Image (cartoon, rainbow, N blue to C red; front, side):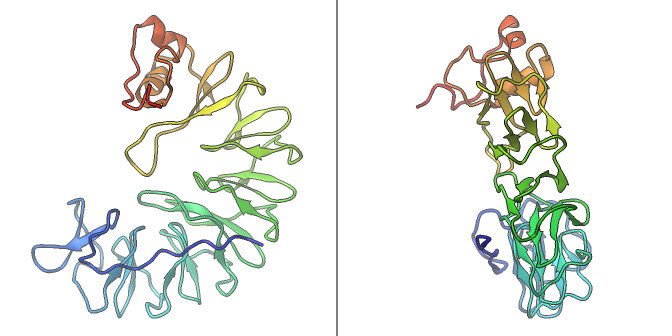
Length: 280
């Protein structure tokens, strides 16, 4: 049985909650908290207005995705299932549009969703599994078994069922379900290889490979880092002698050893910039 995912709760325009997108502007209407320009259909503050952390909002007459009206959505029954999926009981949407062929009577989120603006994540109904890539319409996950499918949470990009493994809504090429397990930050492994999303990490040593935490002051962190006894990695790329990738390691890697960095970084005399480094 799939674990129930808590729905996002509505907040009024004047709610003092970190992460909410909207606030009351100087003219008494809706404004963006970050000061950016708001457009489309919902500048005017109407009766019954509430907002959600993922940019959806509604009033007594309509539902909106980042200010753009969702045609046909019923505000009276509207619910935000995750950062990626919403429903009014008659249809299911992500931020971009209606989820084709989704059954709203059985649809549920498989994870909390991820994303500062467009929500990524998995959802499923009684017949199919769906993936929301964020800035595109959600699509059906081919081969996924809706009965046994699980999202790995974390980045909300990787999932699995009893038969296959998936990343970004597609099966992971050459990954064997037997012995497969999720690591973190979109890395996974089976009995023979390490994978980052849908790509095999070439040259990775299974015995010593480990994902390295990254520092970020934002909810959505930077791309992931890893290492083994032989190499340093940024996503699926070896960065031992790559200045660009090594600079990323210097800036974000959370490690306690000040010399734990790609060889090119040591050669150039760089120092780790992360303020957490060295703390227990």
